[in-house]
Image (cartoon, rainbow, N blue to C red):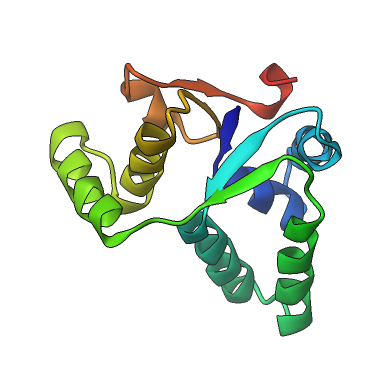
Length: 136
């Protein structure tokens, strides 16, 4: 199972440079040939960025509806305790809050690989960061 970071979805949703690579990876998650995990916090972050980038409420809704069609995507809901632990990761690992919640969710679910373009995760020895093309 791979943890899927916000930037993988956003690359596709905002039609950025590596959108095709992300689309290919996410299609595998959608079809069920690759298992993925993300968090409610990441979904909210994606929605906020989409809104900031001028996407309409119907486009935000379409993204949320698309998540229901993923056969192999699990959503981890961060608890208050997870969020407290994330602040401790911030102190120990020099990660921002966003990345620390991801790291905490990965710890709780025992997932040790993340698909992300965020190189900050390369500093965390206990997890391996992959780009979408490397996870196929």
